Length: 364
Image (cartoon, rainbow, N blue to C red; front, side):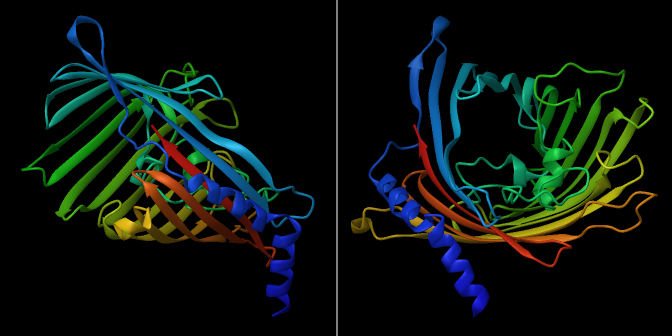
């Protein structure tokens, strides 16, 4: 009971309840998520869209202030030159950075190509748009906590895949398609392996691939593999493996939905010989609300993520940790609404660290 009283006292001290009231004003009617179609040159079409995500985040760590900030301010342009040729440009209006920019060729459903810059992600957990995902921070971050060897921050599935570059935006070539009467699908990327809009620094390329079997009703089972190129401690090119599996049951904003990930690989940011393991399970349940409520629906969720970043030959002891995230999303109209998440992190120091987050989503 004492821990609970301290937790509530700390939340009140940081003004979190006031932040919740302020976030509630954002539930006023906002634009739907369709995007605006306009005519472009030579008879082509262009769909212009934008998204804004506005966040309040409070950490339980001493001396870390609660903060309001703009989490995302993105503009997206999707163009169609013909039935078989499309393109996209998406940029971060706040940071003036290009996130996605590619030409897409669609000769058939079984073989499609993107050339340019795109999200490399081997796991669908990172490919899922933040318009669908009520999880505010995929890495489970807690401001002021830096426990995870090599990658920093908290130890979680999302943190490892993000910081090791397995799910980054990168320039290169992407091949994807569905075959066997749409029962099977694949996704293969060949990229620089150096992150967002970076030139390559060695003679190799990073390769990742995912093979999926679709089970019906939006469910699927996938296996993925990545071989990254990076520099080892001696400055020489090293191939870094990672492999895993993913199970998805259900689909977005349609009743119950389960996503399970398991991954192993090399934590090259820690050392040349450190091997990491990570597991995550996330459950969601979208529930529509009556039309006269003025809201579209609500979606409770729970994420549990466990990770071991690995040990070096010098330090044999590993650091294992768990992130538990309960949360809820309230949809006003379309993809617009308010989400609240509580990230609870427990590492080797036997303390529970927490971060409470509110985020307002708006899509045009």
